Length: 255
Image (cartoon, rainbow, N blue to C red; front, top):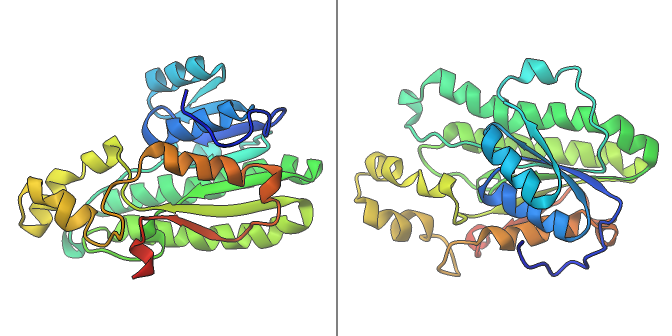
């Protein structure tokens, strides 16, 4: 279990759904919410990782392929907290970007968060309390070459979050994004070869010349650092924080 700076009973009695929670950042978020007392549903396309994380946290496993968005159309979620974290990455120049990969990213990272929010809204409105936290990225605020699909999806997620904040506010529902820079996860590690090929540099140079090039603090974020912010946004103490983008990007977006 990760260390937490949130009181261990801050989320007692709350239920949370975290997507992409089988490993990496999503798992760290699920751990932080559970450490604060929430009952967590772990959603992930990897059924084995999903089950393992749920068992570790005493939560519920929900193996689900969020790219199959048509299966989410009539879904209803009875949860207090929804964390849309699931994501993938593909790196290509615009003119070489396979359309099917572009659409896949948008289904998982924009369409699915909308459908899950839609599914959770009725129960949240009925209770007069809800937290929707969308894990965006510094790339929801800034652009970089070769990531047109990812950046377009994350910018779209920012707009969705603001709209949900306005609609949810009168019903006690907040909506925020958390915008990390590069986090020390498998998703980031898996980009190294593609980044090197797209930019014509060595794999060894990617960390310094790409991952840390725009950071005032010269290190990758740890998953737990991002997870702690997500957990705080889920608490009652964050009840007036809504419609906002919260950067955990080592100063990238300050430049």
